[in-house]
Amino acid sequence: MNIDKKIAILTGASKGLGSAIATALINKGAVVYGLSRNMDALNELKNILGNSFHPVQLDITNDAAITQWVNNTFSENYIPDILINNAGVGSFHKIDETEADTWLAMINTNLNGMFYITSKVAALMKKKKESSHIINIGSIIGKVGRTEATAYCTTKFGVQGFSESLYIELRPFNIKVTCMNPGSIETDFLKTSGIASHTNMLHTVDLANTLIHILETPDNMLINEITIRPLNPKPPTH
Image (cartoon, rainbow, N blue to C red; front, side):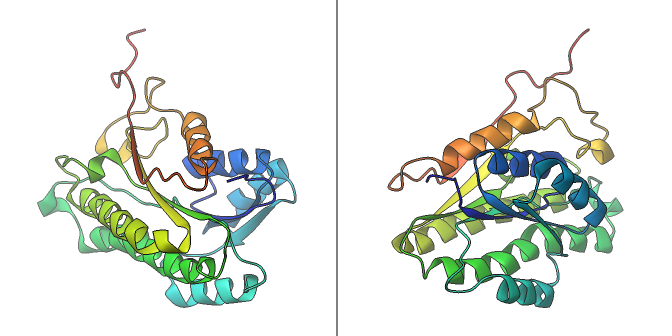
């Protein structure tokens, strides 16, 4: 895909990996609709990225709000080319110390929200002849379990299954689906599990550039899954 002038939807766009992906897409000439609940952070990003970045304050766990936004923004004559499901929440606790609200928050954001927006956008993408691409940001612990992470692992294993089924379903419509599974990233995401970020972890800009490479593959090439690990995940010794 030639990303220049393509229309992209990016969830979880306001910080961390999301803001790095938004920046990489804008640098390639895309028009980006960046979704987040944090409008202040989105506006700060717009000040940096310019008018090709459209901030959208939206809670992806609200199916009715997503439906209304998609219907008001897109049509058969204005269809997204790229959807990146990046929004996600994680909280790490022992199973008997995991509150029901914590469990449901992860299910609702990491799985239900992904379904809500993907189902609407895929219906539009099916109407296009040109290649489209959906990228779901999973996790390395969507492939292997981790102690004190039952809720988060459940959702990320779900992302894996969702992506696997979706690529088989949508490939006849010239829609690519990729599940991107990064290991530990240099952000504060793992803070609640007692893991502090450090420079040996994956860097958001490097992951964003890898995502761009996946988007730019030839139309008849599908990378349906990719796992990315830090070479040496241990903290630096100096």
